[in-house]
Picture 1 (cartoon, rainbow, N blue to C red):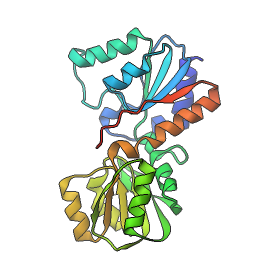
Picture 2: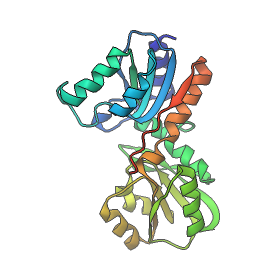
Picture 3: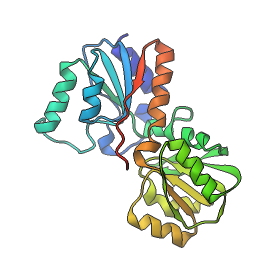
Picture 4: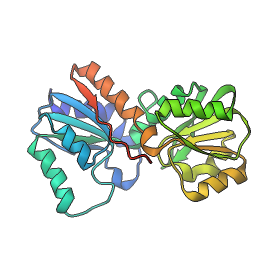
Length: 251
């Protein structure tokens, strides 16, 4: 499979060029290889541990949510040099998609987590970087304890919460990743519960004061949905094997 055939397809599918993002995201192809791809692996982060596993077979395309440049511009020295050298020595190509993958209406982190929570009447909600990023939806009235169990099951691990809102949950906003600093904006959408990945200390207090339930389901855990869906989609589309590399941070 030609690398740039895959890259062109990804850029079109994810609307990469048109979606605004944080400057360090650098969405798109971040590291080119010799042009040949024989398998796809996906992961949340382009960290050393992930790259080492991805290079166990040559001619691989690694697709990540958080790319190589989140720490900003820096010299190719030390551990950063070693990581890039490892990838290049094994002909590994790396593609990153941050907000374009969050936003995708079928393969995105937000829509997939919202559907995993069985939310209905979904609508895009809450603006990040100039575009509606999350999804708000309805659910049959459910106790807060039961809903917490549902979130925990969806993300595959324990969750933390600020029980500022009602005991019965009906209106939920889902924004994956580190959107906990958006509690004020979330409350303004009219939901009683805000599900995100992580937030600052002050977000807990804001949730209490605004009388909204805030559920921290894990930055990493809430952002595994999109890369998995994308890997599965590309495998079917281009008849390539794919795998997910799990490297959780616990955050």
